[in-house]
Image (cartoon, rainbow, N blue to C red; front, side):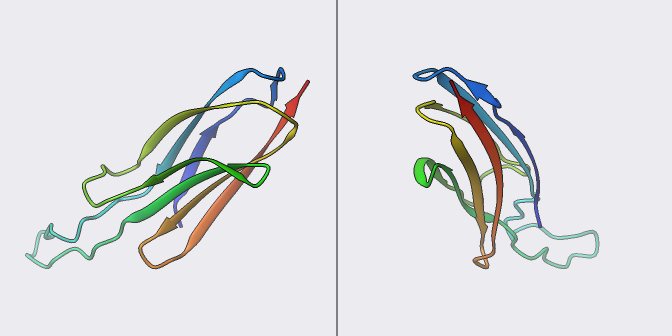
Length: 106
């Protein structure tokens, strides 16, 4: 399971553009490297990241083996109503991990 750090405001004014930052701790191993004994290190990558605001996708990214370890994403959305920001990422095996932050819009 990947660990993450999310920077998202807890409050915003209606119509305000908010910045969201996500750091996902993940090795993003390509499967091409070898360990100290010459054994191939198995591939282990994240395939997709998505952010939903009250169920609507506001940002999505496809990730590939060329993406560095611990992907860091920054993106913006407009605060329209109070609700949930759901951050979801899917690994190469189809396992989905998500975290949610609440946004209070005044």
